[in-house]
Amino acid sequence: MATIIDRNDIIFSSQGRSGTPDGNVYLDVSDPVNPVFEVLASDEISQLDYGSGLEANRLSPSGGSLGGLTFKALYGAITVYRGANETIRRFAKIAVGKFSLAGAYDLLNNWQPSTDADLKLLRGSGLRFLSVTGQVNRIYFGAKSLGEINSASQPYFQTSALGSSTDFTFQGDVDEMIQVFGTTANGDTSAGNFDNRSFFSLSVRSWGRIHDRKVLGDSGFESAENFLGGFGLTEPAHPTTGSYNEADVSPDGSPVAPWSTMAYKTETSPVLRSGFNEADGNFSESIENPAGGSLDEVVAFMDALSRSPNDIDGGTPSQIGKDADTLYYFDQGIIVLKQGLFIENLPSSELTRVRLTDDAGNVKTFPTLITVSVATSAPAQSDANAWYHAFIEDDEDTSNDYNSINALTAKDKDGVDIKGLVSGAASIQFDLNFNAAPIGTTWEAGEAYQIRFIVGGDPSSAGGPVENFVIISIDGTTQSVNAELSNEVENNV
Image 1 (cartoon, rainbow, N blue to C red):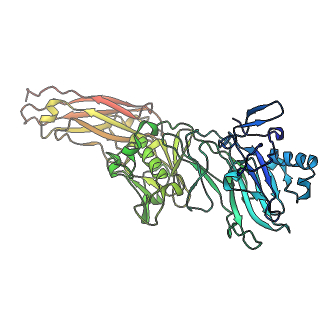
Image 2: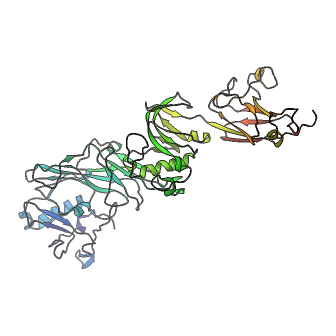
């Protein structure tokens, strides 16, 4: 059932819920100094007469974008009712509209909803509760989500940065008034004494969906006041996390590998990190990943942390997961980490899917790394003295080509020569930085080139390999290059 927006769907009752109500709104003036109104949904009175006999009460107790009634509709109905009912006119006016398009209204003359449940059925507005003399006793901010939220998801709010989280009354889409100011100075003894108007956030963090959090500034608001505030809160399906079982991932469950050794911590002092396309940078927070979990697995771990009601920080300070900021967001498929956060030990082939920001606010990106794996032959593996050596096959400057005195040894991403002993390895692996020109060459970064990978052996070793080579093309079209090098057994020495 949709939210009531038409005042004609509101029927004023002659009795309240303590009696036999015959409408869905009751104005209780039995105590004119403390007048209240009741909102009677279909769970309290199932049928009403709208003029053509009994039918279902059009006011539903559901939440979010369903059920309840807008205060605009209630205000309009009250205005018509006072015009037609001389008895209710004997009592002080209930409300005044301040700006209907913003959902801004004032309750006058100490009028209030009878219970919090009555308040929670009001939609599409914010409210000020005013005393008889016009002093502000309470302010309620109308929080509304504008994006689509799953009907089974539980959104929540905070009224202070890193403060305790409170669930909204209803699951799914948000349309609810939250008290952000209260004072007992004017006689409203239940108003409380606080002012939380400077901060307000909405979050939704369901497993298997992209987490979202919005604050006042995201909607251009400087303060949470008595108006309706729309936020682009949404939670589309997550592209990867939903494929994992949260209990296997979360430190609050029974995590399995690789999550069982992952940890999030604030470092005791900033750590200088390197390996970026840009200059080195300091990072104060880390995701430890000793088992080398994939980026998707680390993202699932961060999602589990962001849902936790416990302290997720292995360092200092204490951070309650669901109360803290989200640890990352998506930008056109790229994982963008929160400022100052670094992920350790990610597979090199996945680094280009991550964008970081160091403590100073400088963006850091990883080079396009290409992992080359060369499968070795049985003769090479069996020869304790078998060796390998990689060369640049040819250069734009032909004097550096292989088979010349200036032939260039190929270097890995860290500038280390790609050469050494096979030492029984079934494959030789190394990483290349395709965002940088091969060291020593006149090629430009990102240009395709070839490597000659050679394996030879010790002629004095029985069963050793006959020297052979394989040409490996590096063109950036794939981040994993696999090659195989065969060697005959040396029988001629």
